[in-house]
Length: 242
Image (cartoon, rainbow, N blue to C red):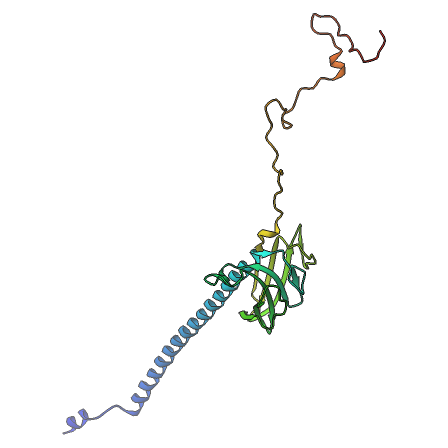
């Protein structure tokens, strides 16, 4: 009878509490692992999104700046104008009119920094300086600061030329997390074009090559007698009496 009662007995309270504690510890460890994996995945997704946004910004800037044109617009004769928070210039964009031949491929573009966001504004018409009715697109967020530099026989922080454009443009962007990105763009229309006849002609037959040293004869050497011969006579000067 006692053995049957002993077989029907369950777990004691202490055993149940120990089992619950072990289960809680295992659950906590599993939650920490899962939570860490979720945080790493979220951080990776955020970094990937930021890098993708930076890459798109660089690509858009590269397309605008490398095709910059030395052309002003009505209301702003300066081809490239830099203000405190904006950079305006004229550029050529064939993709903007792709499939839409009625639209021009020369645009007046303004890159501006407002509310920690980098914007790209396109004027509704080339010779319309007012951007109020243009297309305004946010390109890069969380921008803390930016700095422009221009290359023309050396780097400069400002650009005051009216009809000329620089040979290169440098943009340094500082994000809110203190990351710094530096981009340098080469402008094709900013380099001087070769003029006609700038290439030096090749030396023709019978013309001495200036790069080849020529034998010269000094007056003193000309007056020396040749080997086994008579002394050389001085050359006669026109109008001289014998």
